[in-house]
Amino acid sequence: MPKLENLHRIWDLDTFFPGGPASPEYVAFLDLLEQDLLSFTSEIKQPTKGVASWIEHLQTLDALTSRTSHARAFINCHASVAVTNPEVRVMESRFRQVGALLATVDTTLNDKMLQMPLEEWTQLVQAPELASSSWALEQRRQRAKTFLPPEQEAVVNALSVNGFQGWNALYFHIIGSLSIEVEVNGEKQYLSAAQLQNRLDDPDPHMRAYYMDVWDRTWDEAADTIALELNNMVGFRLNLYRLRGWDDFLFETLRNNLIQKDTLDSMQQAICQQRPRLVAYLKRKKELLGLASFGWQDVTAQASGAATKLSYDEAANFIVENFAKHSPGMAEMAEIAFRDRWIESEDRPGKRVTAFCSGFPEAGQSRIFVNFSGTMGSTVTIAHELGHAYNSWVLKGTPQTGRLRSSCLGETASIFAETLVGNAGIAAAGSEDERLSLIESKLNQVISMSVNMVARYLFDRAFHEERTKGEVSVARLNQLMLAAQREAYGDALDRWHPTLWASKQHYHGAGNPFYNYPYTFGQLFANGVFAYAMQAGDNFEKKYNALLRDTGRCTVEELAMRHLGADLTKPDFWHHALNLALAELDEWLEKTKKKVVML
Image (cartoon, rainbow, N blue to C red):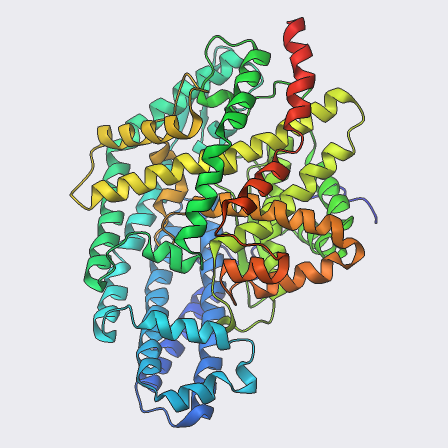
């Protein structure tokens, strides 16, 4: 496989619609999409005659959903790199109106599905043309029973443009507008939130503490406005739940993620029971760093061995080479992504903070957003997002009606990709110091995906409980976050991050509540998949692709039983998965004990 060299670090969006966020071609695409959605809405309000008409409706819905996703991805990508651009905000608003039309189409079709006689419905889901969609259609019909009458849901969709989505847009505008002053070697610099977040990994503990002071101050200053946004977004959501008769604020997230409460509880229980091992890791890190006070900013600091630094080209080659060891298809897609400029990796002002992957279904491509800093951690982040892209790659051509979107299973694909890269780095280490450093990078990911995500979930649950009684103040939000972090991290830290609810984008997503535990699920389930990969040998890629194709076509419990023979509702699976994730922990603790003695 030829080496990747001189790679661009700015993605190519003009291949979809040239001319930026206000591209005339994009505007024309939206205009036609809006017309077609309005036309289809009128069409489906008429009586539907027979299964053949229903199949045609569902095929039209597939096409409209694909076009809408394509349009959403384009403006979202532009917004992520130029939040303050007024053209972006105008086009985001324009797209939200179009997105609301698709939601109304979905609502209308859901109601018509409920009205279908059982005999006709059975014929529909058994139609050969819908063979890959029957499970998802059955789920859709069951879900439709839990919504308001279609006229009321249409009003909800219209109000959400300036409700859910408006508050979400405000949050991104706030963080994108931040210009944060820091002083380095007597010189003032102005950083975006994303750039400052990267500085929290500074190897100098004094600089890390300084940047953490600035980070905390930044979010303290923005807290009042962000608290207003968060309270109103979640308040809107809870009011809607009450109208729909959903008396449990976990109902939507569990249903959307195709996961049972027993599975979620078993996973959380297993992590809590293994917390002493995770805390021991953090305490050893504090000893190695020689710090009197171990703070939030020190959790990912390099404590053992020399930190691995890579250029962007080196990171790309490392990822592709290690994907190829298990899946030639993953390697091929990753090489295309690097060569064809699917990835925005440059560290510059004006960008959002959080990495993501957006699919462009009309082109069969994805785009990946990261802020690459040259560390193994940021290399693993690229691998993570490429895992999402590969999931879309495998599902290319699958009807939209044939899959439900579970973040738990989406995060499995991404974390499996990062697990491949992280484990490969450890296996290929050329010295003990390098091996310890790479093990530490892997353990940092476990802390992030397990302990950190548990803290975020505990806060989210506590906040939703309090928000049902009224608005929650900044002071109380901070208290809830501190309590959650202390419960998750035990006594491992001396300094906390009480405004994580403000700095973490995932709390502010309009359509994906509780976007925290899916990462924990993905981390642990991916380790189960990795163990399976080690046993499957050359047959792995075929079996892995089959697993990915089943995501969204069964519950997570059914998927695990079907492909891994595992019962996710029992803690045993999660303990085993944690043990796999922490496989090198004892080695790291033993070998670093010698380093502590030498300090």
